[in-house]
Amino acid sequence: MSEAVEWALHSCVNLTWLEPDEAVPAARLAEFYRLPAAYLNKQLQALARAGILTSAPGPRGGFRLARRPEDITLLDVVTAIEGAEDAFRCEEVLRRAPGDHEGVDYRKGCVISQSMRRAELAWRRELAGQSIADVKATVEKRSPGTPGATRHRFANLRT
Image 1 (cartoon, helix red, strand yellow):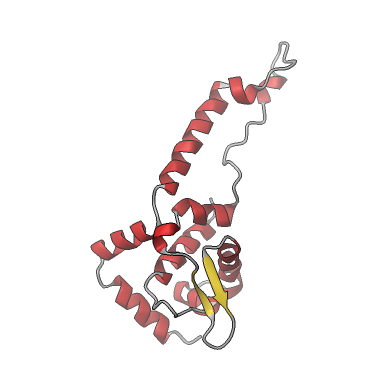
Image 2 (cartoon, helix red, strand yellow; image 1 turned 180 degrees about the horizontal axis):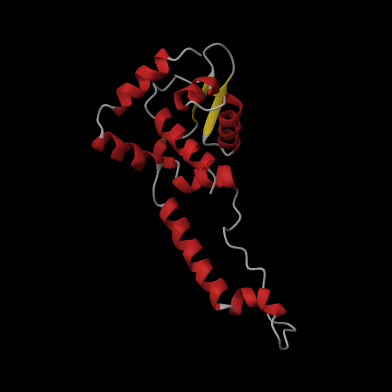
């Protein structure tokens, strides 16, 4: 997984602390993290295409959540950034081993392929079972000053 997933998840959580009609420009979010604006904007656009964020043009424009935090899973964000393909793709390397392989689908019969598929499903279930709201609640419990500090920092960034 690329670090873009981490930036996207943090951005979504930080956007939960904005006022409902407030939006943050990509440049301001990028400055918040000390990232190149073009890099973060690419991730934010992917989130917008996936219906996780919405963007508004103009002087008061920027990005905000398109759905309630309870309705955005961690898997939604990962999939928006990384795509929906499985992390492990069985290439059926056993076909190269000695023996007759005609008509055998190793993706179904290979123990390694089956093990990796089970792990992938467990990982996806775990991510699908946690929402941005869940992460937000945990952050607020562990560090109650984070929402206010985040809003303050966004308000005082130069961009």
